[in-house]
Every structure is written in C-alpha cells, then in structure tokens.
Length: 146
Image 1 (cartoon, helix red, strand yellow):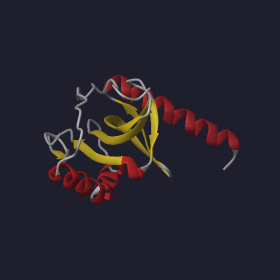
Image 2 (cartoon, rainbow, N blue to C red; image 1 turned 90 degrees about the vertical axis):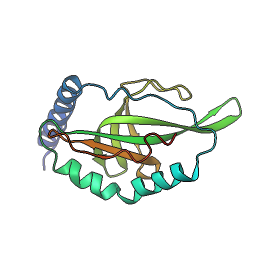
Image 3 (cartoon, helix red, strand yellow; image 1 turned 60 degrees about the vertical axis):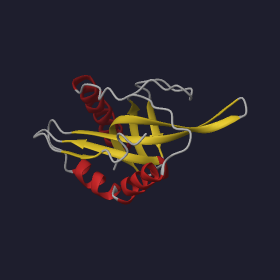
C-alpha cells in the first residue's frame, strides 16, 4: 500500500472518530474511590478480561447507534503515594497494543483530562460495556461493585 493511501485512510478514520464523538452522548459515569477491591470486584474484573474477545468481536460488528466503552486501570504515583485510578473510556478502537479511547470521566488522581485520547494496554482493561441500538446491554461487570 502506498503512503498516500495510508495517509488518507488514517485521516478518514480520525474524521469518523471525531464525528462519532460529537454525535454520541457521554455515558455520565462517575469516579469512585476503592481502597481495597472486594473479592466480588476482583472476580468481576477477571470475568471482564476473560470475555474481552466477546467485546472485541461485537465492536468489529458494530451497527449504527451501538455504543461501546471500556474501563481501564491507570497507575499513578503522587508524591510517594501509588495506586490505581479506574476510568471509563468511550468509543474504543482496537490497536495492536490494546485500545485507543477517549476518557469519559474527569480524572481525580492522574494527570489526564476528560476527552483525552489514550492508548490502554489490554492488560489494563478491567471492564467493558456494550449498549446496542435496540436496547440490549452487556458487560458492565464491575458496575455497582465499587
């Protein structure tokens, strides 16, 4: 494939991502502090990771109006205090190194911003959510367990 074609394909993908971001409303998800994850929360994260191929397959077969999100772990070190902040990302796009997505919350502990495009390694994904145009929801394993 020549460089010009690759450039225009990448440009078109970014334009489509921008249009999707403008058209899709935010999921309105909040940040919750968890000092020590419960056994249920840990199991839910494991289930989400185990079933990530199900999410990836649905994403590759998305229909107009379907909405997708992933929840990711972001590690921080603030003045010697280390930990994780878990944030939802909307409009994820698979990449060889994980997923690209837009932060859909206002981070509290990390120096990122809502709406920022980030690359998240697959190992840092702790949950996923699909809301189809016909009202079916799947994933969201960690919701309510924080």
